Image 1 (cartoon, helix red, strand yellow):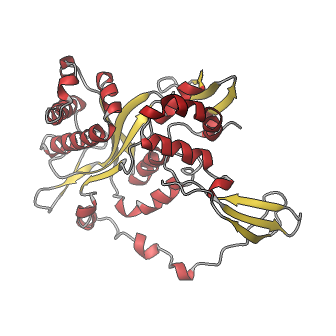
Image 2 (cartoon, one colour):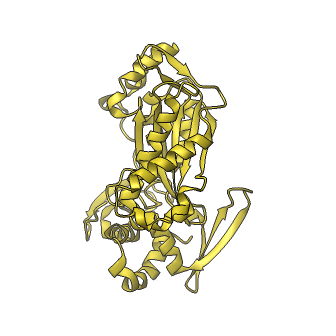
Image 3 (cartoon, rainbow, N blue to C red):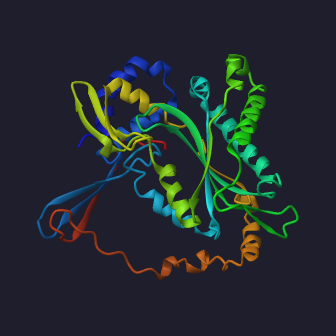
Length: 362
């Protein structure tokens, strides 16, 4: 099976030689991490099977958040950590998408404009929801930035997971939304566009934008997505998914990469073949700036406001959160089972540690 790491190892040196002067440090770091993930370069451990008498090597992961090998098992852990945020109400997914005319500018100034995108979309949704015609109270939101389409083109947008209702201004009532409606999309789009324009005016980038973009309709989508548990499970893959997984890459031949994807509208399986250089370019444009926070919490789900969750549960007549009580004391856990040989199932015995050749920042 072809992996992203293989493409980087074979064609990465040529790509870096050609573009390194213009590449961001975060892009270089991600490439190096993915190339060395689970190889001897990062060190690991050597085991010996007592049954088949074979040595087995277990190499360390790079833990870079853009590495497809390192993100596979994170969604379930995140879901478990979010249990204390769940409320017994319908949830909505609200998606804000930047227009095509802004995408080149955003790609060139990612950290600043991603932050503006978060700030303006969150304020727009909170402001409209406070209107008595909609929710009329303080809402809670979990937002996640995504930058790609399924065929790896650049398409920055934010998904917000929002409980269907809000807390009244005096904190005495839970104000439920309708089961199938949260806010109107058109006024939300207008408000979002206005806030983004006002924020951009504070920067030197405003004059680089075609004025026509402020007159067109911006895309905002709002739809119900079920109960809290279902909604968080729906959101989790967005958090830990990278632009493309290894299992979607079909082949690497003659300097070209072929991968598959599903069309959003039809669900049809499609194949895309591009040069290795173009594949690397498409992948790297989705590498986030160093230390950028791609998941953010607002309203009564913000870390500083979570004391309000207890009040909301009481108003909803919901049971007390038992997440902490259900947690298993680490000292009480059963000892781990012995490691088993992937070849014959025999017991693996630790032999030695392999020291890493280099230390990669993540």
